[in-house]
Length: 266
Image (cartoon, rainbow, N blue to C red; front, side, top):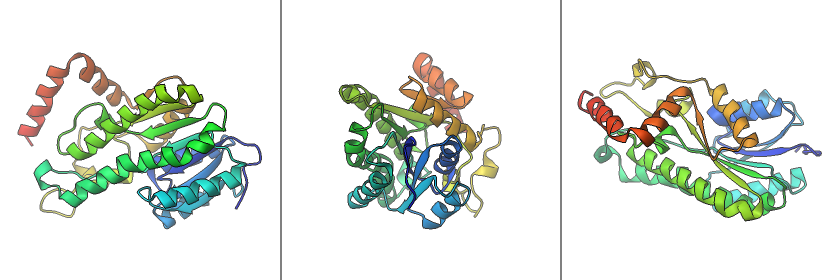
């Protein structure tokens, strides 16, 4: 296992693909030491293959597993001299469909990974964060955490919760000199878009998303960098996320009307 050797450090969950992988590459290119963690060992290996050999450590665990968190944070602390400048709680999953069609077990899984996994991470990492001056927690929420999203109701609920948790802890942890930020992407070109299958076929959602903006994953990584170095508590990814947030705050009735039209015409 390589060591940080004085470099700034970031612990990344969901590093085996998507935003987590792009963020690892983005930060490593700028001299940071990255902890790459995911439930998918093959994905972690693919992420690490494109990084300098001395720029990372890796581990495989499920964010629902508190014991797994403890082991991963301990390993990371050994490699970094007990420092964690950034905890990037990025691991997440989604289940798409009308609320009544989403199985209870699937809904439970979304809540356990997207919300409880984030909470587990903050609890586990807090001792390292507290001893690292200027530490930050970046929690991946979503535009679905800014606007209630039909056919993503449970996913949306978890992302609202992550945003609320981030806003509350940013205030609470000010006494510890730790910032907590919610990253809120619009649709980004990651494997989570494959959660949607068109009814009656084996095709995925991406080909059916005509007219919906999908942003490159590198944009999310760059905005994560901004979140680490900026002052905003909510950091949005993509102009569509900015628009959605604006309408939800200032024109909520109009937004709800447009969303109902979309649902009724689907």
